Amino acid sequence: MNISLIGKYALVCGASKGIGRAISFEFANSGANLILVARNIKDLMALHSSLPNSNNHIYISADLQEPNLAINQIKAQLPSLNCIDILINNTGGPPPGLILNSTIEDFNLAFQRHILSAQELVKLVINGMIEKKWGRIINIISMSVRQPVDNLGVSNTIRAAMSSWAKTLSNEIACNGITVNSILPGYTSTERLYSLIDNIAKTKKTTNDEVERQLYSQIPIGRFVKPEEIAYYATFLASEYANAINGTALAIDGGYLRTI
Image (cartoon, rainbow, N blue to C red; front, side):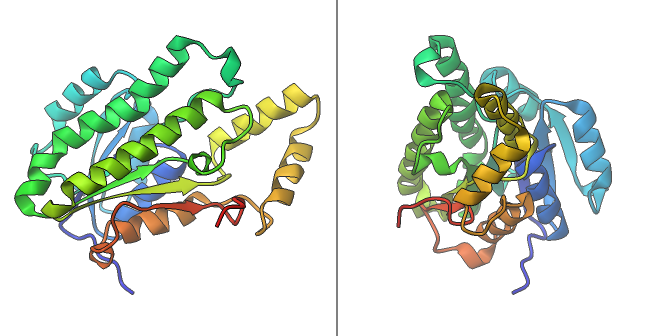
């Protein structure tokens, strides 16, 4: 199977690190033209210069925690409001913590960064997709949609809401040739995971290595998922091969989830 995204424009959020970075490389390797969005301008510049065919890509520094400001920044720099064929909704997760200790502000910030930003991004690109009768909206969420993760109270709550939002949207716009699918990463080798491991180790007064060993023991493949493994599936979903795949939420977790 030779996946080609030549001629497609993809807006990738959270592009500078982790899963977003891996998706950016896979999309670029498949021929897509990228609009890279993240907060850190230095990381974006480094990513941009390292991508194949870097002249075909642009980068935009924007903070999705402030959806209205971010949308205006993206809108001002897009080559065309109707150019986007593929949207990757992907933003950093809320900080760890017990749900009982979380504040209204914690929930509001997470809601803005995830659901409100995704909603506004869809509204930004949807007219062009409808006009072309083709589009892909891919959401990077979390396996916690199926099974809450300890000490991620706000994240568990927001991720589940994001999944419901995506499923609802998929039913509304499929008639226009636009698919909406979600990917639910498990424990994936990213900066965020190692930050969570550090937090767990400090809370439990143990070592990071011990926390890692405990997590490995719960994952049937015996290791963390690689960001590239998430990116491979995202690239498939973005391709013509996935025309009939809509409204799904697939866990890529090495078998961690115990549900069928």
